[in-house]
Image 1 (spheres, rainbow, N blue to C red):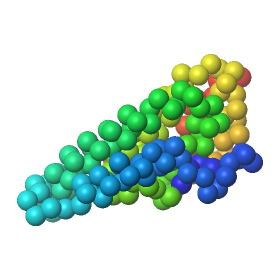
Image 2 (image 1 turned 180 degrees about the vertical axis):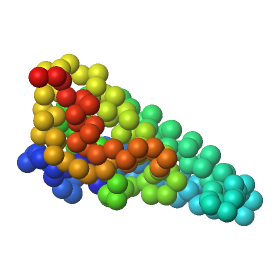
Image 3 (image 1 turned 60 degrees about the vertical axis):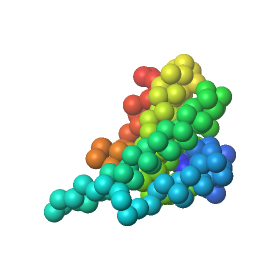
Length: 159
């Protein structure tokens, strides 16, 4: 799910983010369906607390990198409002579930935030629309739980 519907009447609640449009293209979605599953000869990391398919993670990272590279150029073309509408929040509508999604979405959000940060202060003033959005962003599973509000306050220009 995107940040859509949160503080900006131009947001469409059922809109699909750019990263999901790209990930759902057959050249990616077909590969995701193939690599993001367990195979009999996969290597596993296994301890009493967690079990991870290391081979699947490696395959998924390669596909995620391709998806993100394909989307990267589009970020510079977006307005700050469009960038905010493309942030991915947890438990949302995702075109890349599983291991691939867990690689794509946190990195996508980092790329979006970096792009917003690179914009002139005058362009970032629109961020005030999102100062009361407590949706949690997709971040590294071992990382912080960042809300949209926290990210916005870090990106807003000083008054």
